Length: 472
Image 1: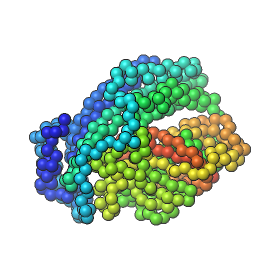
Image 2: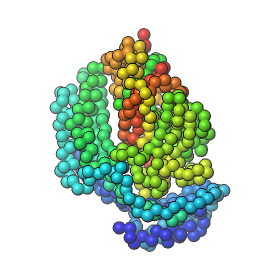
Image 3: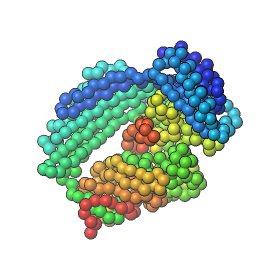
Image 4: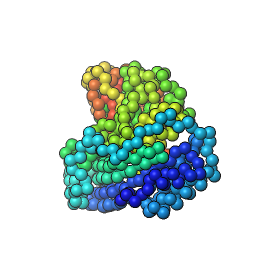
């Protein structure tokens, strides 16, 4: 498919009018989406998207363009147009290039530890894929007459990549991902509650050996039904225990984005210019690791061709570094951390998280719960908002329980966590020896990329909980 593309010649053409660096990103992505709603298969979409993105770095400016026409003539035309735009746009003060050229890579083999592919989705029929959707729908609907709506989504993606740059790098590989989710809406009188449960990772159809569709559906349905009978959440300041099952949503949002180097360099992060400073409790260590097997945010190399690696962001509460792509790394005078990611060939790479987590501690989760006289136990987080400049956040709680006299008690609905990321991280005083993962698609600058986040059970001794009943 790409044999006819003269990568080296196109990259030279891109730099003909000036610039320090150019790279070319070829992508061919085949995806399948199956959606079940209203007790029937509503959508079956099978698509192929293919294109090339070309970038020039000229000083501190980025010039980018893309095309779906991968003919030789079209690619040379694209290179010429971007080259002229770079010349006319001019670059700001040049960033010194690396002192030694990066070693040339060629056809890097896909890491078997990342892709333990047992059942490649490309080898399965559409009927087999639709079957897991139907099975989940049936289980969710028959579990209780109060179930009103069920939506089941299946999606698999097979992405072939080739990346080349003006420093002589050439790398290619394949990424396969599968995602499955069930959303259930239940009603009791005027009370309506939603339960949602996702599963997914860098794997094929073996996802359903780990997470049978019936189990995913049952979890989503029972969550929505449980919240129907839940009491209104209390409001006020109280101790909060975040279960490992909650996933690392708070960590991802409250600290992760703030540690992406572009935001930090622009002064748009509360963690700007704080390397070496204490930003969290000494019990907290945060890492970003795209090398984890089968996790949704895993990859063998990033979208600039840099081999993936584990990055320690916070160690013992001390800020150690940021997540870099090539441009932000050059600005800082360091190496890229391998976190230059993009949604597709239509987008330029920017610093992004992969699998971001708080590492486990030493306490048993039940010990942490027993330590709380009265508070809130968060089993599943919902959506939220974070101001990366000052760290303030608001998060919904999809599944929460009261803690009374050291025991998890009755469920509550409508709880909201309100606080400040840096402050909360500094106040965490207990860290569990467990670890639970959540998955998602992270949005930034109009781009969505697959991610995972994780945390152990954590205790926050005092946090503002928004609810509907005052704490007595």
